[in-house]
Amino acid sequence: MVATELPTNASLAELLSARAQRTPRERLALDVIGGVLILVAAVWARPGGWLMVAAAAGCFAAYGVWAFAELRTLADDADPASDLWHVVQGAAAAIGLGAFGLLLLTALGIAIGPIIS
Image (cartoon, rainbow, N blue to C red; front, side):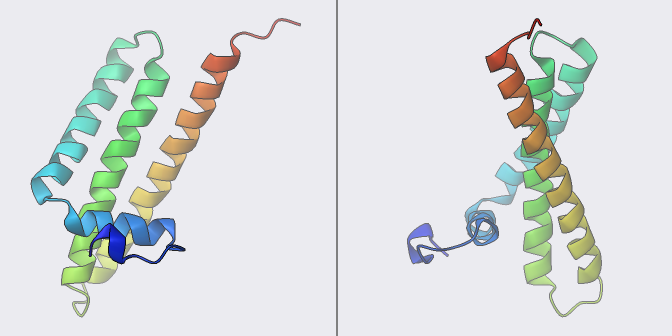
């Protein structure tokens, strides 16, 4: 499915699903592995702005896991084990949304700066 084939009012889930189907598995693996490695390095080293870096890396890792689960769900839809992939997909979506919320709040905190009353 190409992005031009999607309707103009497609939901975020439809857009992400179409992107997951077009993305090679090696790229998804790179998203997961790279996201986890950067997340661990940011939490361990704690450089300036580490929370923002960790949240962005969490978004990449969660998207990679979600996309893998999406591909497995589409491939094994009749298989009873696909319910496990639905759970993995839901958990990855929840973690990704949490990481995105943290990324937005951290960026807002950096933009506003310290508030002295």
